[in-house]
Length: 619
Image (tube, rainbow, N blue to C red):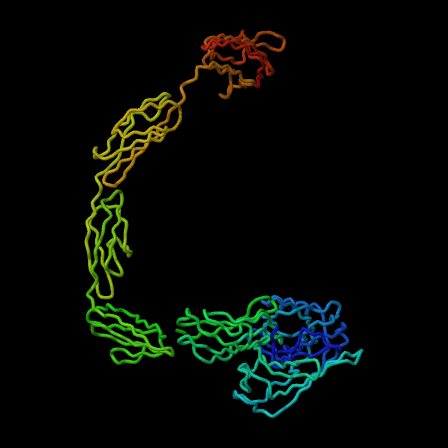
């Protein structure tokens, strides 16, 4: 493990050790209206070998009185809000039952009126117990820097010390830390400056023994140590296979530190200071990286890009075919400085004459030349290609310009047309406009046919008369029942009942056309004899179901006798399709009720039918 901070993985031998103070907390007035710095300051400490009750802790702030700690629904809500912002693998937990476990890391937040958006917890990779001081202090608990509003590389203000004392009252054990407000650093790692330039100023205290005080600024975040990897210095050159000395640093806890990149070799891939020698494949920019693994198991890296290779690769970009009567701008790239054949030394020049233009580009590794030929051109030279006659469409494709406008309104290079006629296109480029006309003719192919029958009983023979033109085109029939033909006209017999889609396809000079018709082949009529007697009718003269009618099919002879419940015959039907009107043989209406029948019939297919049953009369 590589680190420049305190050995936080240890457990203090005493009751606890103070590790850091966020002296200059951030305040975002748009996000935290009405919030003050005193409500957002924080202290971090580590519990010793024995658990502690939060209620047994007392604090003597450099400024303001201690308000006591609180754990309630409000603090639970604050913890939930803060946890929702964490992007690392860390977590904030309130002490269960008010007990801080032995060896746990604890974060003191100075007010339940804190603004959760002010100091970021996004990079937290630790599990922290968090406790809150009751609200009540609105002015700061600590004192910010005294170096004035101007940023300075050295301390400007006089030494002025502040003391923080925390005590475990039952054991009288505690920890005292002292910091010098004149040594508080800004976001640049220097001294002084405006309020926003000093937000995030933090003091770190190492242990065991006499605290070693260090002053850092992690910006607007809680006072935990982020893993920061940086490449601080590079000396030497990779040109011509040379070497560079690289110096890196790691702030915070990180494991598996390693240098990577390039095709060359590192003298030591895991040391903070190493020498890199360029490889044969190192040409142009070479990116080298130094990475460490965070507590979340994710790499944190810093990179540096160096120039390697015998000389720069110089390129010239710009329009080398400008319009006649204009000029063009050429831009050189790939080097640090340039000298053109026109004696200009900028990376950009304006050219108004034809000819070869050369530039020499130079960087730390040498020089290289690039050349282009500038030739002035006239307007567009537009040509139109047609894919053929309409069948039923054709594609017109224009070339020789940058933009196009057809008389159809289209602005693409290619259009599809389905109507014969003359089409025009304007070709447009930076040098002018050109119009081209093209004639489109229709294909003479038309396909159509007429069947002499569309519906009929199976087997059905249909004559198909082909009216397609011209007759010398190629034609293909698909009769829909698996039969095909290339005859011009034909006759075909459909054996099985069903619906058949008949398709005729014609082809002429690559053009296709088609026509189709639906042929319906019906089942032949049935010769089976059937008899069916209704079971109820209502002779009430309403025009609906007034008589009893036997449903018959293919019946040659039929006789049906109808009896009342005493066995008296009240009706007689002596032939098919004769009906009974619910009157007796004597012509008297019968009463409502159930009547019985005996029916015999002979079908045209020779089948005899004997039926017995009942029928109900409803008045």
